[in-house]
Image (cartoon, rainbow, N blue to C red):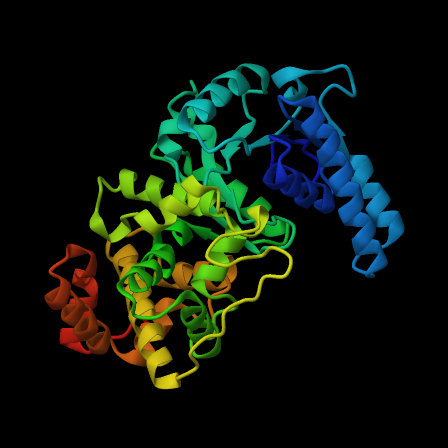
Length: 395
């Protein structure tokens, strides 16, 4: 069936991400059905959506009638007598947004395929797992692809579209066109660990923790430098506290393992110990910062010369990842810069930033770090070195 406004859309998983995707699809006009193994979670999801839309009505972001109509378009499995995967029997697209475990996703797709029409497209919202592996659980893997939203899905504009090895070109084209119609900004990424954003962003966290461990600066100073000098909306430590160290560490470890333990993505003991201690960030009251009542946030050292060195080291590591993603054909330069600005709100595209600094400057700094530490984590991308030699730019 054609992927247009009339098709019913299914969402498997009623957590924050699944509920957000359901809201995006319903806002476009689709009838949506949401299924979660936990009936209580579906009740919470419905109540959360009602509250969120009520707030948007109060703020004038949506009219009361439109909000009511949107809610009416979202149904929850069991309400119409259908339960389990058969709730998706009339869907033209089902988006899976369950736990980030390969075994769970493969099992879900095997069961999904038995219940949906032959031409229903199956999409996974995985943030870092292999789309090809998930698709291989299906008899018709050509209709499976990755559609990675960012949280919160109704707010964040970026969606990474990831074709697996077996994804049909027509499936990729039709799904990208539909998600574009939903008002999202789409980029196409190769089926490699972390895709674009979660791969390239690793040094924002990892190199910052490394400098903290070395005593280069404290968390407050580095956060200040990245905000005030680098132009980032949040510094790395406050962002990790906001995301949750359990989530951030899990993604880092997943990418590290998926890249066969490439040292560029090595997780840190510092963050692991925070997770083990239950210091998960804002949601637990403590992380790199103390969020409990009466706690005082430490003051940064606002020496701008020192801050500029911090920013340069982290940004050069990010640029190197972005350049290597181009080199390994993960995505186009334009899609990479678009992904980092729209997906994680970077102040500018990293490849455009490289053009501003000059590839030679980036390669020189990475070379100095590699010479000092003797670690492969600082190796410069072959593409970046070539561009430095030839004086070329990405744009």
